[in-house]
Amino acid sequence: MKLVVTEFVSLDGVMEAPGGEPGYPHTGWVVPTMSGHEAQQFKLDEVLAAEAHLLGRVTFESFAGAWPLSEGPMADKINAMPKYVVSTTLTDLGWHNCHLIDRDVPEQIAALKARDGGDLLVVGSRTLVHSLMAHNLVDEFRLMIAPVVLGSGRRLFPDAPDVLGLRLVDSTVCDEGTVVLTYTT
Image 1 (cartoon, rainbow, N blue to C red):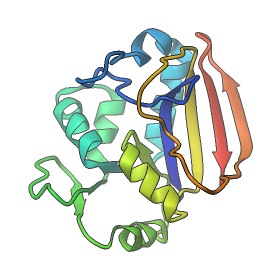
Image 2 (cartoon, one colour):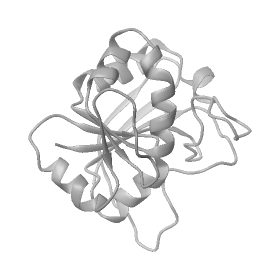
Image 3 (cartoon, rainbow, N blue to C red):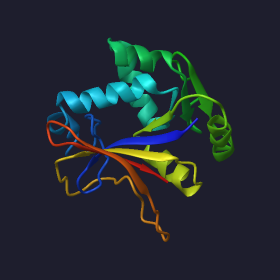
């Protein structure tokens, strides 16, 4: 499997609370900035083509609170597909086809990547993404960059002593000004 980090990101690199998660002053910023047909179609196509999701605890809890109650092709796929959840605090995942990763995280994720199959998508999950990057487990970044500057918030890429070189392999400009950039590591 190819491990793909796919994120909503502002022009200034913020990924925090795009969908309305509480506690952030600009929460829900993705809705007014990425509501066009092309951006929505990109996300739908990405999910339908994926094999599984890999989620950190916070993103998992958000997904588990929303997707089981949703309908449509994307909800059907997300609810049915395997979901691997990285957490040392959760014990009962309570959602169909979820698997807990609570120890030896880099080794277990490397074993998942070694399997045959489609993409293993990582959505949100900032802490997990930072760990995956530190262990060189990310194969691809798909960044949906919104035409907005938030000015504050948690960022996708952490401060780090080393340079992370990426190679642009695709770019798309969506109808509402969102730019989708795909990079390989």
